[in-house]
Image 1 (tube, rainbow, N blue to C red):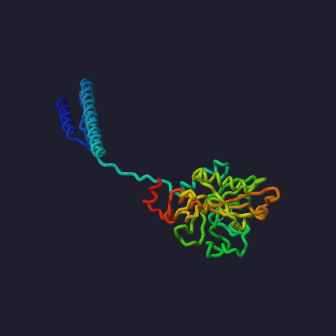
Image 2: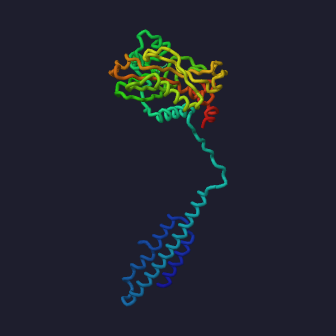
Image 3: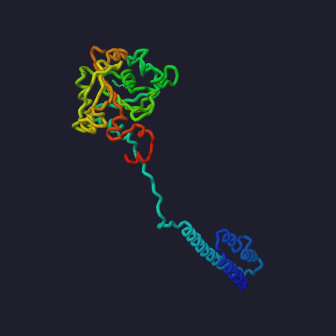
Length: 340
Ligand code: PHE
């Protein structure tokens, strides 16, 4: 009996020593101490043993079983270690490999100036209003007092999406949308994209950007308009920049004016940028026409207002010394990278 047990143990030892994988180990375990193992069948024979020897017989078998279990456990540990070492080896990171460069993005120069314009007006107490790129004729023309036969309504100037629906040609649409919804005091700017049926050249683009300002309150005068413009221009371009206004016409303002600022390049003495005039055109302005106020239900006897619209593309080109507007829309990375 003892010999038989020793035989089983010897066999199990040599079998286990050659095992290197988990599935093999599981198989071996059931062969060695499982239900159908030699050891188990020995145990079943206990009834054939003389009663006085049974106790010792059972003890021997149990001892053998414990020992075999220990053998299996220690083999399990060895195999776990083998597997772990293999995983470490196969997933080792080579710290000497050269890294991959990540490309850092940046804001488009137009976006940077757009935000600077917003910050400047916010610091002056304005709020930011929003409108729609796709508008109806009412908000783009009718409510802005534009005659039915005004040339700007023409297909040659305006992109129509369908009858009555168009891509807004100016951010002045937001004046109307704001006054439709809010009563004075109103003090907003509306930056946004505008569209006109223009050929692209160094100073025109069919898509461009304006920022509209609208202030409506009691006792608002042209002096407020001039003062606000001056502060804005000096914040954006420097203390020595002046603005001036020239009489002009817009259907929705009366009186109307065009805004110039002294040349940011030569300071007013005359250069290539300002075509030797010393001045640069920046946009349009005026006192809101009482007819416009009345059409949105604001009492024009009690309230007055001013509005102006400036080109954000123009401001960007001047601030960054960009000679050709087309560069702003080509998204050439060699250009954009300079403004990160
Ligand atoms: N919307 C006008 C334009 O695009 C500019 C403007 C705005 C004029 C506000 C007067 C008042 O030309």
